Image (cartoon, rainbow, N blue to C red; front, top):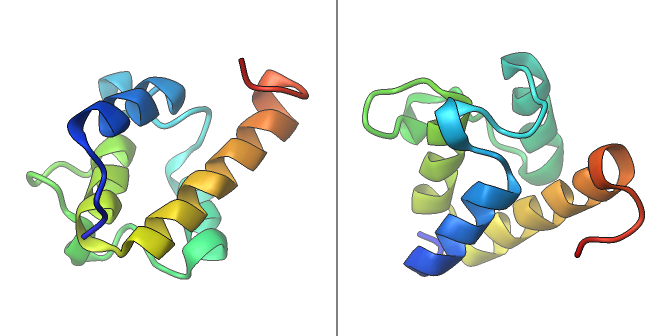
Length: 93
C-alpha cells in the first residue's frame, strides 16, 4: 500500500481530473495499456476493484491502495510525463 496522505490523494485526483470516474482523457483500453506500460499491472484485475465500481478513477485509487510506494511513484511520474506531452504543454504550474 502506497503511503499517500489524504491531501496528496486529493491533489492527484484534481490533477488527473478524476471527477465523475474519469482519468484525464483516457478511454478504458488506453488507460489499461498506459498503466501496464508504466508499472506492469492490469488495472482491470479484480485486485484493483475499489468499492465495486469499475470506473477508471476507482481503478487508479485501487492501485494507490494495493501497490507499493515505488510502483505508485512510477505511475504518478508517467502521468506527469503524459500530461506534459499531450495535455498541458511544457510545464506544470
